Length: 95
Figure 1 (tube, rainbow, N blue to C red):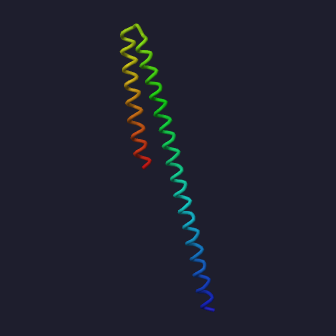
Figure 2: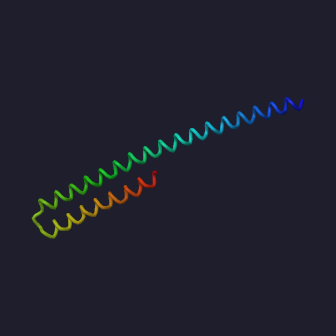
Figure 3: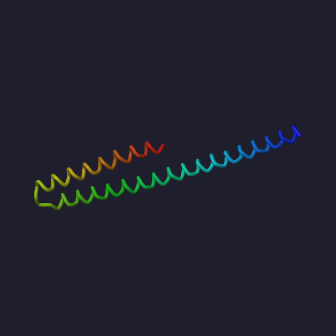
């Protein structure tokens, strides 16, 4: 009888360990998928901000009002800097 109890306990422990390992593997897959999705999102975010900055620069080039051109160029530089800083920080966080 004691041998049967030990055998059942060993089987239960094996089942528990197998289940825990499957959960760990699933968690790793979820984490990796989340990192990839986050990286894709930040790439798109950065491209969008750079596109906005490029548009602001083009507007500055065609503007015939000097203060408006200066303002648009400053805004474009600021937008590029924000894009660079925020995405770099976010990517560092995803590592």
